[in-house]
Image (cartoon, rainbow over all chains, first blue to last red; front, side):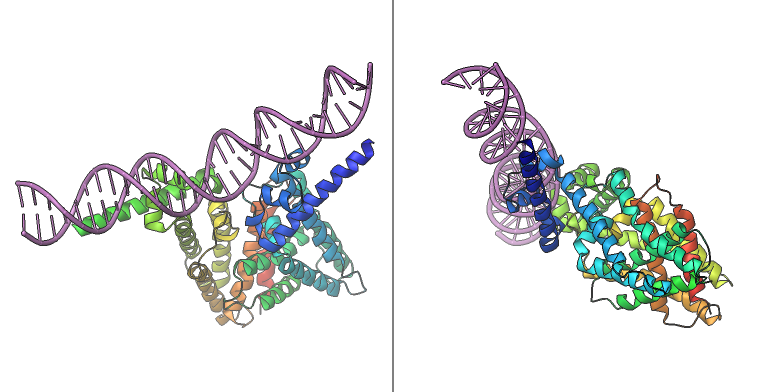
Length: 197
Length: 197
DNA sequence: TCGAGAGCTGTAACAGTGTTATCACGACGA
DNA sequence: TCGTCGTGATAACACTGTTACAGCTCTCGA
C-alpha cells in the first residue's frame, strides 16, 4: 500500500532528524555530517538527499523544531493576573532554553552550521516567536503597567535584549569577569523599567 | 641580512591577512579557504601554516583586528561635555560598524568560520572593548545622569542590547516587518532610560 | 672560492566533507 | 512469468584543511 510506504518513508525521515538532533546536542555542529546522521539513523546517505534534498534540509528541520520548542518553553509559564511577572518568567524560560540547548540555539541564531542559510519561510516562522511575546506586552500595556506603544515593536526590543545577553554569554562561557546571570536579570529589568508607564 | 628576511616574512604574513580580510568582505566566510587566501596573496598554502599555524591563525588575526577596529570606531565620536550624547554616538558607531563590516562582525560574534574557536586570549581582548564603554557610563554616572552602579556591569547590559539588535538584524535582513533601525534606536534609548538616575 | 649543511617553500598526497552518478535489487502490471 | 519502473546502497567526484616530501636557496666554514 502506498500509505504504508509513505509511513515508512516518514519513519526514516523522522529517524534522520532525530539522529541529527542527538548528534547536534551531544557532539556539536561540527559532528553534524551527512554520513554521521545517516549511520546514526541506520540508513544510507542517499536518504538524506531523497527526503530532504541535502544536508541543509535536515538542518532546516532542526531550525524549525528549535523555534517551536522555544515558543513552547516561553509559553510554559502560563498567564496570570500579573502581566509583568508573566513576562519575567517568560524571560527566564528563554535563558533556560538557550543554556540547555546551546548548540541548537547557535544553529538558530549564530549560523553554527556552515553554509546553512535558513529559507525565507523558516525565518518568517522564527520571527513569529515574537507574536506570543507581543501579546504579553500588549496585556501589560492594557493593564496600564507599560507605556502604550506598538506591541510588535516593543517585542523586538525585548527580544533583542534577551538574545543579546545570551549570545554574548554563550560566546564567553565562564572564565570571564562578567556575571551573565545577573546581566540577564538586570538587562531585562532595565528594559522593562524603560518601557514602564 | 636577517632583518630583511624577517621583514619579508612579515610582508608575506600581512599580505595573507589582508587577502583574507578582502575575501571575507567581498565573498563571505565560505570563500575563506586556505588555498584562496594563499592565491590572493600570491603565496603558497604552506605560508599559512609556517606563519600562522593553520587557517585558524589567520582567522584569529581578523578577529583581533575586528575588535580593534570596532573599538576605534566607538571612540571616534570623541568626548564632549554631554556624556549621554557621547553614548548615543557611540551606539550609532557600533551599528554602523556591524552593518559596514557584517561578515567580519559575524566572525567576531557568530562563529561564521566553521571550527574556529577564538583563543582565551583573543576573547579577553574582545571583552576589553567593554572598557571604553564602561568609562563613558562611569562619566555619565559621575555627572549624576545615570544611577550609580558598577560601570562594567552596566557596560555589559548596554553592549548586550546593542549586540542583540544587530545580531537579529543581520540574521533577518530586509523583507521583514521589523524596522531594525528604529528598534536599535529605541532599544538603546529604553535601556538608557532604565539606567537613568 | 668552493662545498657541505640546514632551513624554508612549493608540490603532491592524505583524510575528511557534501554531492552525484551508477548499478543492482525489489515490486508492480500485463 | 516476464518486462518495466523506481527506489536505494555503493562508489566516485570536487572540494576542504592539513601534512609529508623533495628541491631550492642561503649561510657558514675551510
